[in-house]
Length: 59
Image (cartoon, rainbow, N blue to C red; front, side, top):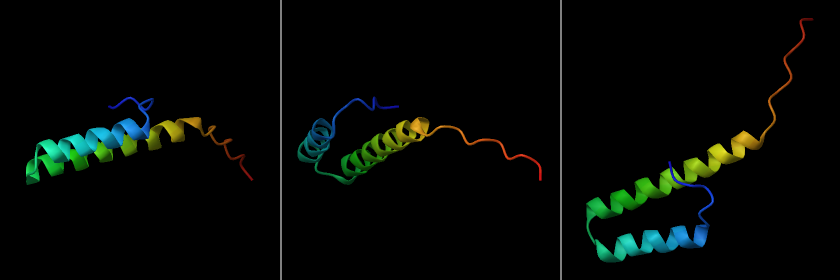
């Protein structure tokens, strides 16, 4: 999993470097996978900040 502390500017620079250095479908697909993994790591990090719900009491 990617470190969530990586700032978005650095991440975008990495994606651009991948696209410039490897102008083919495989590299483009790899960049998409990397971007999706980074996004999922950010989502997971945000979800961990949400406190757990209180259990429902029986009515």
